[in-house]
Image 1 (tube, rainbow, N blue to C red):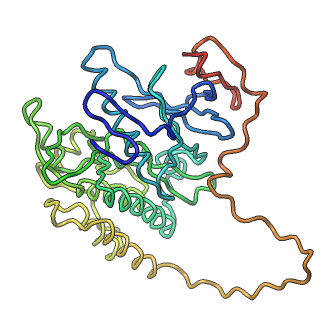
Image 2: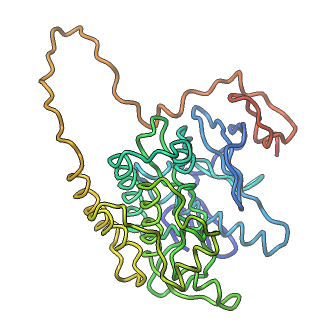
Image 3: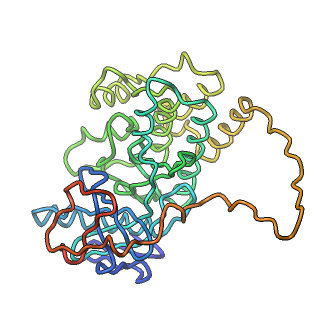
Amino acid sequence: MGSGNGFYTGGEFNMDTKWLIDPKSLFVGPKIGEGAHAKVYEGKYRNQNVAVKVIQRGETPEEIAKKEARFAREVAMLSRVQHKNLVKFIGACKQPVMVIVTELLLGGTLRKYLLNTQPRRLDMRVAVAFALDIARAMECLHSHGIIHRDLKPENLLLTADHKTVKLADFGLAREESLTEMMTAETGTYRWMAPELYSTVTLRRGEKKHYNNKVDAYSFAIVLWELVHNKLPFEGMSNLQAAYAAAFKNFRPSVENLPEDLALIVTSCWKEDPNDRPNFTQIIRMLLHYLSTISPPEPLIPPRIFPSGNTVFPPESPGTSALMPARDSSAETPSTQIMMDQQQPRGFFFCFHRCY
């Protein structure tokens, strides 16, 4: 796999030195998330609050090689794409363990946000605005030839004000080429495109081509979930949902959706991937729908500047507001690996000494 900022050749991974972090400057605090392949901690790196993703290395040589390849792909892709709706990449290191450092988003996952809102539904304007953030992130990825393959609420993070959604976790992302054949090692069954699930039944090691339209399908399921604030394929296990979608062409009901929105959802989860829209088209459709439900903007009177000494409120905080200056007094070095213990916020351990 090639990229401008790093490349993986199957045995060695070379990364642009500007993305290498110094483990001695990294401090790790409480665990904030865990998946099948990694654990995520709140941390501090130099003058930033960060999220620290620690990749599990594996035990057998085969597992180790697979994890290193996965790490290499994720770092190369994160360092290559930048967008306001993609989690900002800060750096990575391979020793003493494989670590990926990104900005820390304090709003939590979209999954947690939806659960905290239940049983109420989101305001339709909020749901569509979130969907637009997701679609713009996906449009950026696809423009760089990257397929995410694991689009779901657990991999979508919110800013502290709960107004912006950012896409995270490139662990299953792949570069797309017309000739490349890819395995079916992919995301979560409930949000998985039918063509991905159908490859799971192939013989071990066998591969099948698919394209970036797998992300359009997953987006449709996420959009349905945003609008309904319910788990899609309710009453089914993950495997049952994937089987029903792949082999019975079953989809969640759109009976209660407005006609224009139902059209967007159903077009994105069509059985034939080639019939699904791309994300540029999806954004256009969402913007059109949003224009039909948004109230007109109120007229804002011109600002009056009474004197040159008037103090105006500061600009709206951006990403920098999520990364306050590091409190050096909180950086208590430790020789014990205590990262799994839920310590009070602000209690950090020196990553370099832990490992």
